[in-house]
Image (cartoon, rainbow, N blue to C red; front, top):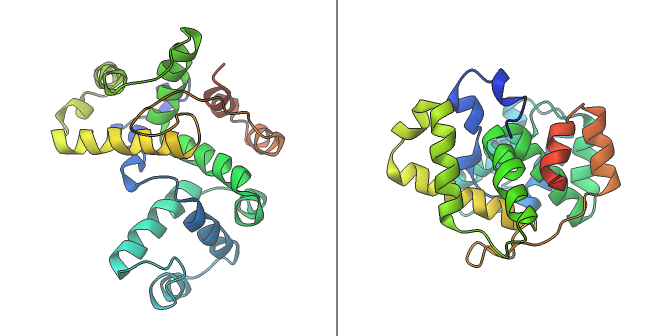
Length: 207
């Protein structure tokens, strides 16, 4: 199944998105969402992230990197979306950040809509690394640049992908990769419908 959004993407970098940036980082995402609601200037952003260390990271570099990843994933989201992440329950914030990550990385959304859905339909108990490798090879035919990435980069992307999926609750852990059921919250469905992102609803509901 090909995501209609995939055909609109011109570069492999856009298709990949900022997946390599890290896991869902829910606590950090709630803090960044609250900060973004204040529409900070670049100076105010750096003041909060670096000087005040609102993310409570051990180094400035780590704080900047994590904040930049979350910010990229939340770019273009409405104030209502940001408010729900900032003040919602952990479950709500998690689902909204997963949706934002799927929007940012069409590659991961396609993995959900293809590999995860097939695994569910076949009543498989778990995924394995081979599922990702086969998917990556297939996607490399659409975006040949993917096959030219270093082995270390592609491995890290696979690890982050499974970590994000585990954070969202679709697999028990990155080690077991045991499949679990996730039920989309009405608030998440409503926000995605407002954004006309039925493709993301489909990826999250696995139908």
